[in-house]
Length: 189
Image (cartoon, rainbow, N blue to C red; front, side, top):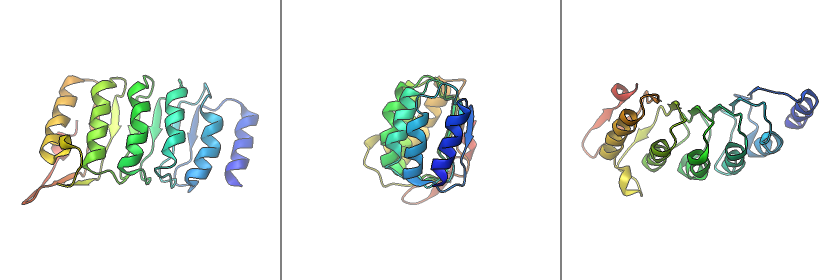
């Protein structure tokens, strides 16, 4: 009901440049209801969906929004249940999107494989100028051969050095190795 009322208000207003739904547990159903109606909105620039209970399923509609909304510049998905599978759903849209400048995916349950997928996106999308990718414990478990902890640390440096406009926020990440753990906060630039 809450999302329906919000949607009515948005339809009356017609122009909305910023929508902050952070800490409102709208879930995938609420996100689908709202975003289906906002994906073609030419005025929406900032969308904050932090801690909204969005899961892998909700990433499908998010992908549509990323592909079709040409005005969206800032997307915050921090503290949702996106996991590696959600990042995989978003990746095609993020590679093709040339408008989003800021993406937040802190504490979204991403492992080495999702981290690697985000680095793949950064290698081809030079529009992103800020990626918030903080508070992950990454380890030796991965499917993608490019997703070893050592390779991720190396790729972070390569991506950053090849795009001087890019700011990576990597605070609080820990790369667990079989015999040690090392923090990468010193790589954050």
